[in-house]
Image (cartoon, rainbow, N blue to C red; front, side):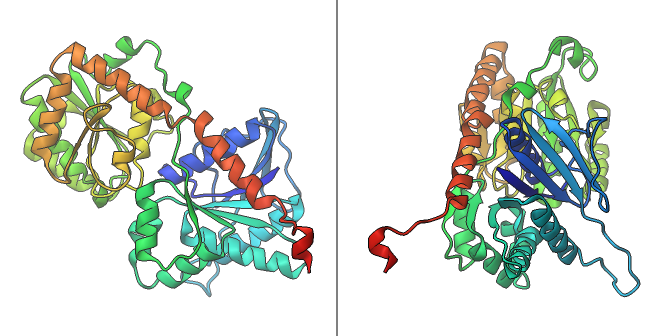
Length: 401
C-alpha cells in the first residue's frame, strides 16, 4: 500500500507516534510518504544512496522491506503575506505527491490544519478524476485546547465529518470530541503505542552515576514546558520528596514556562539537584535511568510520555485527567492524583520509593501495563482500518437496481 502521512515534525507526541507508525508500516513492505515542513525528529536520515526527485526536495530510503520518502513543504516568504499560507502550500504538496506517487490514502495527524488541507487536496484530485481516501487521527490539543476556540470550530467539525475515517488516541478524547463538536462521523479509538525494545537500557547502574553520583533516587519529567503541563508542580513534588529521601530530578524539554521553572527552583533552593537537559532526540536513552516519572498535567489526551516511561520500567506519578487513567493504572503501574495536589503526589512517590521491594514491584507492573500498548498490538488496528477504508464497496445483485 502507498500511504501519505502528514504530521508535525517536532518532539510532540503526535509527531512521534505518526513517525513510528510510518516506520512500522514501511518495515512491513509498504511505501510511506511523510509530508511536512521539515524532517520529523524520529525519522532516520536518508541512506547515502537516496534518490532525489527532480524539482522538489524528496528523499527516499529503503526501510525493512518497504520504502520511506520525505517530502518537504517549502514555506515561502512573500511580501504580500504577513504569515505564510501553510495550509494552501500543504494542500498543493499533498495533491502533487498523491498524484505523482499514486497514493492509496492520506493519514493526517492533528485536525489543524492537516485534515482541512487533506480535504482540499482530495477535492482537487477528484476534479482530475483521481480518488484518494483520508484518515484523520485526533491527538488532543487540536480538540481540547485550540479546538475550543469558536473561530476554529466550523472548519474542525467539517474536516472531521469529511474524513473517510477518524480515530482518537483515547476514549477520553473521543468523548471530548463528541461533546464539543457536532461530529456525525464514527470515531474509532486506536491508542498510542510504543516500540518496547527501544526502551531497554544497558549498563543502567553505571549510567545513573552521571545524574546521581551517590545513589540518589532519580525522578524525571519530559514535556514541552507549556502551562498546561504544570511543570512547576513537578518541582514542588520533587522538593517534598527530596526533603524525605536523597533524590535528583531530570528535566527534559524546553518551552514557554522555562523562565518560571528556573525562578521556582531558585526559590525552593533545588537548582543544584536538578539536571536540565533541554530537548533530546533520543529520550528513550535517558528515561530508563529514572526511578519515577512525574506527569502533573492539567489535561492530557493520552499521556504518551508516561507510556514511554512505563516501557522503560519506570512507574508513573500522574494526574487523573483526560486519557491518563487509560494508561497509568492507580496502585499498579503508579498512582493518580487530582490536578494540583502536590502533597498527594509526593506521598505516592515516597510510597513507591520507600524500599527496593516496592520499587521493583511497581517497575515490573509498569512494564506489564506498557506491553498492552506495544506496536505489535496497535499496528494491526491501523492496518485493518486502512483496508476497510480503501476496499471498494460492491453492491449485492439485489442492491444494483
